Length: 430
Image (cartoon, rainbow, N blue to C red; front, side, top):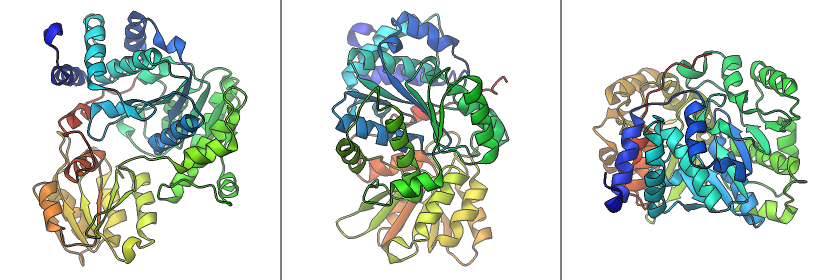
């Protein structure tokens, strides 16, 4: 790549090359690259968010609240649905292509001796960009786990743990206690911790680590959630779980009121204005067709989607378009969703790790033989088969949801960057 003629496409190609390094669990590479970039994290304030589900939604709510309060807010999340630029935003504006090109140019030389992975590289890109943009606050989502995640080189104002459930068990552990230990690795000495985790096994681990690090702990309970939303305050996002996420975000804002005061009116405005695409996102097309997009890629996410579908949106059972990654718990997800569908189409996901559409179809048939199930070659074929259906649910993988956003004309990007979400991780060393 010639720096003088580097284009955005060439920068994306460089990032593609980094993804083949997978994910190195450990902080050494990220710290080295950040040091070569001038340690931009030292110029910023963070709220660090970990957990199994709800991280992105909680981050979106925190960002919206603090932006409504007049702050310049950086937002770092992953994976992206369509464009890599979604991962790095300031006041919900995607990082410009020109800035991606510049940061790749500036950090590439430093990385030649560092062998940083894509996620490590993107983490330092974000830090550098947020510092240059003089962000007042950065909402900082972990990638995988927490303890050894590249994002964990920062010392935040608060550490937030949404919940603990089974996901990425091959890397994070096969018990809730092991998974909680990885997520709770973001807890720093003396830094307050806010969590909505309710599984006793997981909560015990979080409490122990917080106590060992003298970190004040606030646990958001079901009672807190109900009392908070007994009035008119509620997020515009679908699902009871979004009330949980909102209560967690509100508790975080309350804990940080002395450091970053936010008026109640601004909290309401921020919560009312939050958006988070691809997660129980309801779309009504001009012809009246309703489409629900949801990246329910693990059992807990599928249970949440199931609870929403049981309320009979659009007054009918949906046609489900389903695609999943092979390394996910798709048999369990199929069992949860099959009884709720009027018809099911399975498709491969645009990933090297896709589950076979025929295997998915066979699983759905076994669970609900009364419902028509067909395996199709791709998402466009499934959308075409559903063109006369009144209510469609597209779910199972964020890869599939991202492709749907593109094909439905709801994303400005062309989808050529979804492959940047691909990686293969080694086993975490405990």
